[in-house]
Length: 123
Image (tube, rainbow, N blue to C red; front, top):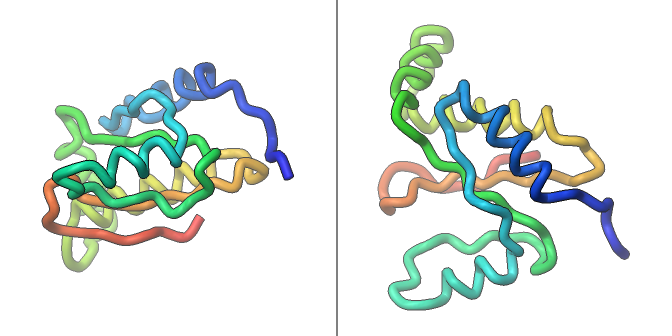
């Protein structure tokens, strides 16, 4: 069955505006199938996305100023363990709440350098 239609270019622009105050950026949209194919290429260090090949994905990344967001989160929430992972998980939770439920948003939290934290977050 075909899912809801989405203008991914317009959505990408809206996502960038939503992410900016949180000091996060976003990649252009990509199909999960294409992304997973790229993950399989040497050196094959990226985590595959567990979603249908035809699903649209955006990779989010931190930009200068994100440490301030992490610090604000730490002062407010006093998380145990990795403060950056806790702040990022909270932001991704907000993002899932922001997205229309008919899009069936799924997020994964992955540190790109191979250390720190890995795992899926419930949508």
